[in-house]
Length: 65
Image 1 (spheres, rainbow, N blue to C red):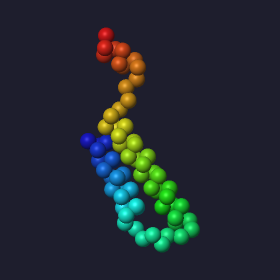
Image 2 (cartoon, rainbow, N blue to C red):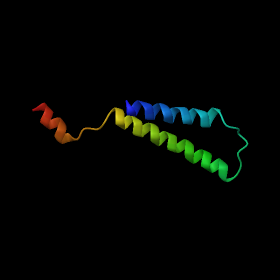
Image 3 (cartoon, rainbow, N blue to C red):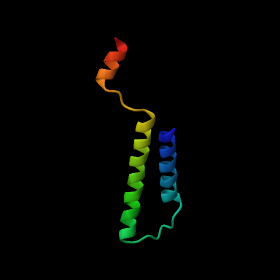
């Protein structure tokens, strides 16, 4: 449930950054905008890992046999 909330929050912020704010940002603000957009993708990826956690090879072997 937490992973889904994180993914939705990251997507909402990314959509707002792409479609919402004014496009007349100049200089350092433009780079901060880009960095914040890239961090949204990291947040979305982290949320997906919360929803679908990786299982190590040891856990798979124990459950199979």
